[in-house]
Length: 91
Image (cartoon, rainbow, N blue to C red; front, side, top):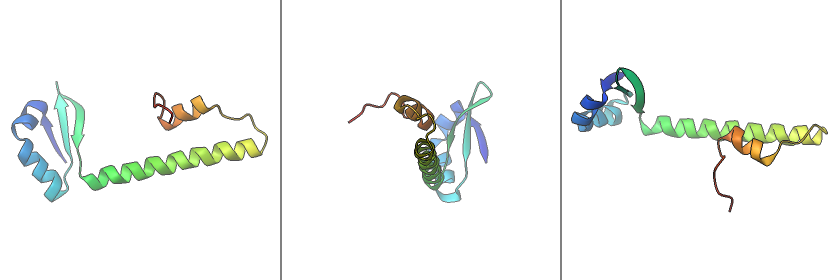
């Protein structure tokens, strides 16, 4: 893992991007000495997305199970909040 300042990251963006792509390294970018962003290989993002989907499916399954068992149903707004979907427009 590489840690760099935002100023250095801006100056060395192409080099850092190549390290992420070809060496599968993670780059942590700091601002004022504190981590604020990261550059990570795309496969890591895809893994995170898959985990979020699994977590969401688990929460929905739990809510359905609770409803079948006669427990207090979860409100749609609460489910959206738990899944990080609040503020999204409904279709």
